Image (tube, rainbow, N blue to C red; front, side):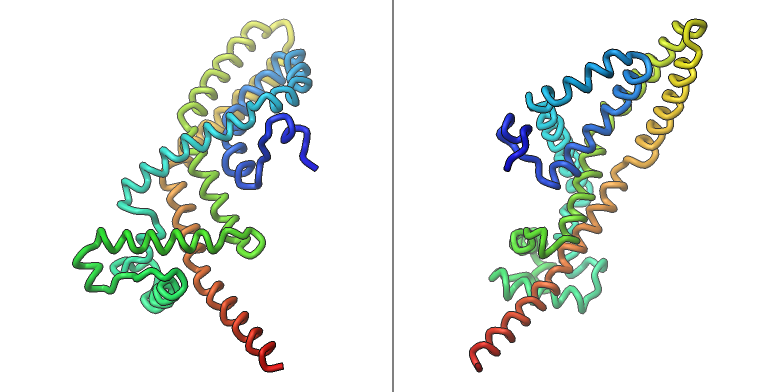
Length: 262
């Protein structure tokens, strides 16, 4: 049975959408919730009652889509900086990320299973653009062949990690701006209530310190290198499924032969 939120919106969040799209956007607006909880408790109580209504009106979907939109911008920038997606780069003969022997098994499997001709060393050198197009086509087939989360949980996990980091970087500017505004608001409320409610002022100061720490994380860690690390890991994990699919295919063939012989 669908949840009330799904019925209200006609949309259901899958695991990828929740982890890679919605969570980054919620992480961005978390400072606002922290500030409201300390300085505007009545509003915080009201927010609890409005949460279900807001969700039903589609705000959670909007946040997820904004994160996706911004994340795709980051992905385009990353591809432009590196010249191609990592899956394509790693399949090139001239790239040394994957060993030559392992890469050959991947090429052989992809040519046999995807029915796509991959370039030789010579043809790649002669026409690298056409070679990359061949690699992209093979990777597209591999992506479709590994869609099952049940059969390929590690691919799914790495894809979620990459999507989360990509979308997080896409939301970096609004996140840092929001943190700055919340810190300023905290200072304002602290000065206003300094002699009236020292306990709350102390709580507000702790929130400001926490927000500054989060801001440092955004500035120091959430960079393109943070996304590229996850992108490389996902690409390697995806390509490694060539071996997994080959093993599955061989096992299926043995089972069919055993059945035929009985």
